[in-house]
Length: 102
Image 1 (cartoon, rainbow, N blue to C red):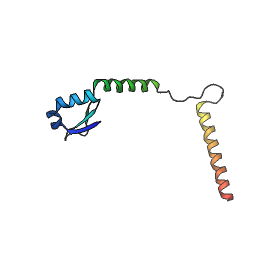
Image 2 (cartoon, rainbow, N blue to C red):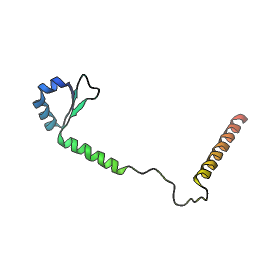
Image 3 (cartoon, rainbow, N blue to C red):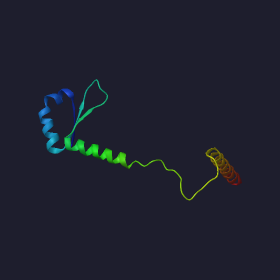
Image 4 (cartoon, one colour):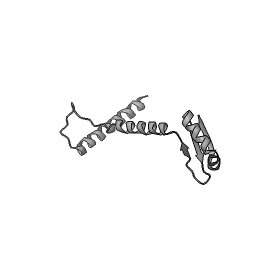
């Protein structure tokens, strides 16, 4: 369960909030009128879980796809890019021709 409250209210109820967060694994968002960002009061167990999850996600990040293996080209990167641009241009022209027929 999540609660929202002002910083002055949280200050008055700090003991109750600490018990709530620890006992029910709740989250308390504390808002300060001069700040854009709220802060969250969470249990240590939840914080550890979130940090471990983030570490795991960062570890799983896959490097950008790179074509390798069965396709081999004697072209330089610039020549390959030029050839791809020509193919795209030809495909656009063929698409226009089909549209004009209808």
